[in-house]
Length: 300
Figure 1 (cartoon, rainbow, N blue to C red):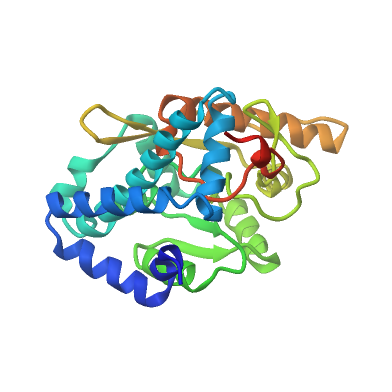
Figure 2: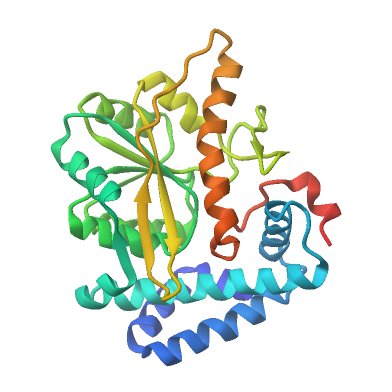
C-alpha cells in the first residue's frame, strides 16, 4: 500500500486529523516537510508524475529536470503544510484569522451570498490553502452550494461530510445536483465549483498556458444556461505566509451564435485569470491529476 493510499483511506484521514490537531506548529511543519520530500521523490507515482507535467507546462516548458524536482518537492511540502494548518487551526478563531485574510471584494461576495437577491457562480482552482479558506469564509457567513467531484471515493466523502458541517451544501456533480444548483441560482443563491481537476467531457480541450488541456468545461455550459455571472476567487500568499483572498468583478457570459465558440470564449476569460494567479505562486497550485496527459512523455 502506498503512502498516498494510506493517507486517503478512512483510517488515514482520521490519523491525519488527530495528529494535526495535537502537534504544535514546529512539529507539524517538520512532519509536512519530511512527508513532502518523501512523496515527491517517488517519481513512479501517478500523483508525482502529474504534478511534474503540470508544473512544467505552467512554467512555459522552461524548467530543467533539477528545477522541476525542486518545484515538485515544494508543491508536496506546501500541500502538507496547508493540510496541517487546515486541521490544526480551523477550530481556533484567533489563529485562523492570522492565516486567512479577506479583501473588500471577497467580503462583497460573502454579503451577496447572504442577501440571495442576485445569483453568483464562484469558480476557483485548487490553490493555496483552499480548505482553510472555506472554513474562514463560512465563519464570515458565506453560504453556497458546492458542486464537487462526481463519484467521490471514501476520503472525498469523509472530507465532504466535514465540510458540510461548516454550513455549505456539498453535492457531487450529477443530474440532480445540477438541477438543484440551477434552482439555487434562479432564487438568487450562490454556487461554487472547482475548475482545474480533469473529468467528464474532454472534447473542447480549452487552451491553458497556451496548450490544449483536459480541464473541465461543464461549469461554462452551466453558466451559459443559467445566465449567472462568473466570479473567479483569487488567492495570494504574502511574504509572511498569510493567504489573502480576493475575487474578480462578476464576469457576464459573452454570447456567440456558435455554441462551441461561445464556450471557448468564456472559458478563456476565466482561465486567463487563473493562469496569472498560478504564474505568481506556482508552488501553491495543487493539481495532482494530469491536465496535459499527452505532454507527460516530454516532461524532463
